[in-house]
Length: 448
Image (cartoon, rainbow, N blue to C red; front, side):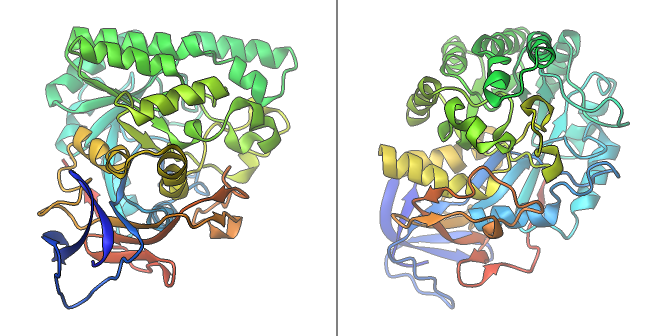
């Protein structure tokens, strides 16, 4: 790789990067090799490590038409994501023990265009050994929901924890040394407010946002932190959508709690006021909040409060989004293909984020948090995972540009001011603008 502006731990530098057998072997000027990639005029970043992605494979006969490994990892390749952490839901069965993670590994065999690390679930029904089985099978972390989740009519679907399950699950996860990622919203309050709004005839996304007020997020984050103090469990708060939630994490960290948090690209891009004009494709939980909250999240993202940015790629079939009543629509945003370009444009180009900090948010920080020790940075000995970004290169996203199985996205029709030109996984080009996404499946499951 020659002539690019390469983002290293120390900052960006015009240099060459040498690769052999999938690893970075040299960084310096005037390197030569059998194959050369000219990155003149491009930013060479570590490939994104998206720490929050839902792939629904297998679908268990219920969600077979949702995102599969082939399309999901192709979208990652096109979007500059070279590895991701896969959530233990919405696949059927959910990933909650040794048997179910083996089913997941089998479902992804020979279907991966990027590398995939796995979350194991913490649910009320796997506290009798499931957490330990998942640890033995190589999960990189665990995930639980404080918000209501899962379909009780589907045998083997995911389920949110009650307070006791959270406490006991944290004690068990603490013994593994791995991190528990938490969806933090107060289920009792948000469920009831949503029910009342629906019964009162509310149908809008604005009303949906109002049914999940900021305090319901903050209260759940506080509870998780208190339980973490009690159990010694390392925790990570997923998709924080409010400034106050990040404030709680910072305060706890200052008190010695091992806690980090993420936000998502869509919370840094959209605001409540525009949701109803876009439609239910942009419904998610926690919800997209107002301009003031967006500004607060940007302040934390530009600083040290937010450790990384994720997509929370959570796609479904179009019919589940095509609802007149926002309360009836599926909550989840497909976004993994537009993490890198949108965040580069909004952060680096529009707000002056340093390239070093950009690479920390998308790659090195998530890799470090989940102990993906071969990933996340351009340094000698690491996997040769790169995304080449063309700055100041606007394009408008069209549905046909998407690699998703279901070509829906809230970013369709948006002008994005940077482009992913090439994605490289362990030294192999898996996407280029000229050739498209590779037909091969060089990705691997990462087991810890």
